Length: 544
Image (cartoon, rainbow, N blue to C red; front, side, top):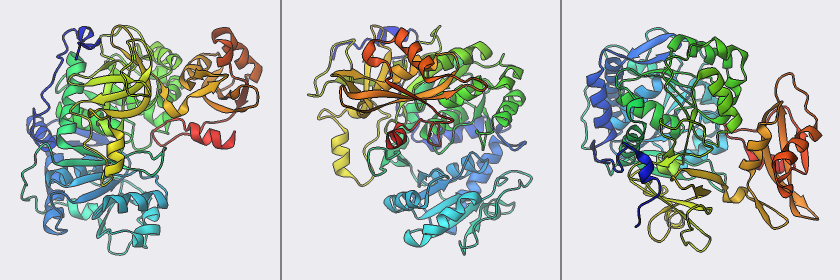
């Protein structure tokens, strides 16, 4: 293989990392708990947990699972909760036994929940009280043996008001009872290797039934080491303060905010409800954060909030964006207030998740997802599977120690997900510039063909979002008798603005070639989004 174009752009970043630097995620995190035992690890609802308290509580939980529920290595345990102090305690308890955590969105419908629990063969679930009504609807349709319920204050010194668990879940166990003082903390730790499974991370199911990506301890050790290597001196052990507004059941926040920053002794402020923008800004003001991660919609909402200027961002070193494309106008607004660029990254559930990210030494927003991580190879291929020349778009195919081994109990899907030479097919279209920075053009299925020309919605959205008065937008293709497909743009106005449809079309016409100009514009109050802030174009297609 010839040298990839991103290697010369690394500077002092090593081209390779040791994916076996730790035998498991357990070893990585136990070392952190010993090293930073007296430091604050998490803050939630005005209370705190030290690293030593997380150590003790998670050992207590592991002992209960092992001795009372007879849960051990290889068993699947579902975790269905928002960002509460109990999340890291439960996570560490599960993985210390070599069990496999199945991350579940607490806003799932009953149908989605039943599918995931049954597909993973889940033995026990740790579920937020506010989600128990959903579980109660389908519990008889699952193979669940044990239910543990979680209230907002579990693991903290003082209780926090929250909903009551659903009364239909007879025999469920409150986590607070399991964690109370006096419960045993002794458990038999199994031998855990890098090949052992750590997570079943279910995909969104946008192209069919939701599938569980099998992520091993080695996958997550590798991605943590890769991330820290590329960030370099921007991550300072024992000094970081991270605000976690993205949900921890999502692999982005789970790997970056929880695992990576816990491993360097960070103080982590957990945000249970990121939709409460005023509350999030209050958290910013109190925490004096050094790092923040978000998706474009979250950054956009914050940047437009008049109270953001109240925050002292002088300690902020890293703003990281992922999950969906970061719009240039959003990054510009964020930088204007905070002084920091949004460093956009790219990845998938199947890749633990990061494949590429902008290094902290970039001086301006590039509109790319940065450089492939150390020990990662990315090639772009055409429809025939041939690698395309530099500067040409192609499907992003990735190889590296962070790439999953396959989908849970789906051998046929696993085979089709990889190229014959073992590269994971992402389904995304990308292009490399001469420096090796990767730009995502779009998902293959989102491409729109207008009069034989390929149009990628991201490009249209990036231009239209910069139009004065536009808060956010989404572009889809709709059938058209003349051109095959035509572009339809859905636009949300900024507060206090009343843009007309023609204003947006005229703005786009000045910046885009004719076939890329939206044929129609719909002004809407809001765009449909997933729970992690991704705009759901497929729902817009259903109503178009």
